[in-house]
Image 1 (spheres, one colour):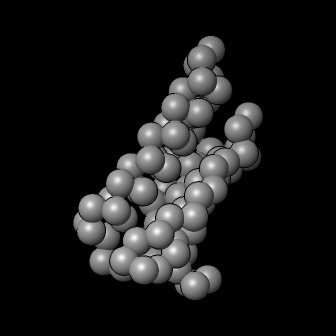
Image 2 (tube, rainbow, N blue to C red):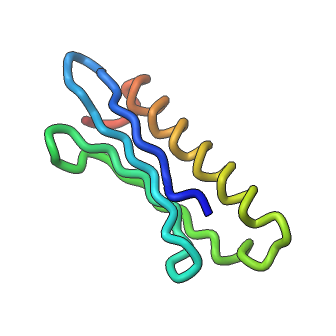
Image 3 (cartoon, rainbow, N blue to C red):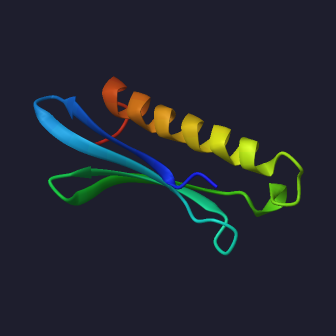
Length: 83
């Protein structure tokens, strides 16, 4: 099981921390949170309980985590988020 990803991104002269975490089998949710100066400025959650019994669930969850993390960074950098 992959625990998560963390990146610091500079956008418009501010540093944002993007953190994606996997809640694991007891809380099957992928959560991505963007922080600026310690405050949450954006977040997204993706439940995945429906795929937990699949044989390739670990690979699928890893891919979902990577995609969500990258998409939140792209949203930040493109100005689509009100931060």
